[in-house]
Each structure stands twice: as structure tokens, then as C-alpha cells.
Image (cartoon, rainbow, N blue to C red; front, side, top):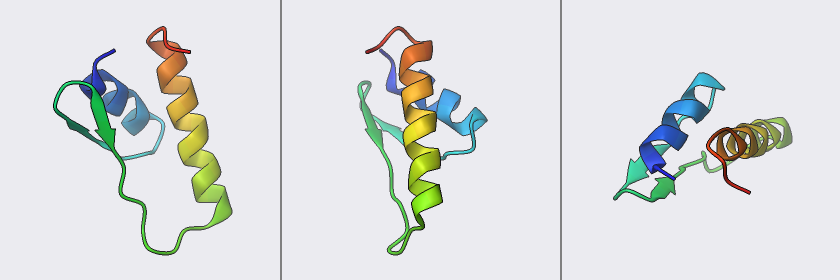
Amino acid sequence: MSAKKLCLSMMKKGVLAKDTQQSTVRIAPPLTIRENDVDLLVTALDSAVKEYGGA
């Protein structure tokens, strides 16, 4: 799975992430984060992984 494709998919879902190398996704949440923001991240990541045939 391409980290870049995963990051682009997450961006379309409202989450910014950065691909590093070809298979690593870097996220940098703020020092303080609300529970609903964590939920958004997890939902977007799960959806993006499923979109590209992952788990």
C-alpha cells in the first residue's frame, strides 16, 4: 500500500497526514486533542486502509 495514496485519501476525509518513505504515514496531532478529533482520525484511517485493500 502506498503511503502517499493513503494520505491523499485521508485528506479527502478531513485528516492531514504526511507520507514518509513509501510505506510510512506520519501524523502529528496537537498537544491537546479532543476525543471527537481522535474519532475522526481513526475513522478516516480505517476507511482509507479499507479503500486500498488493507485490513
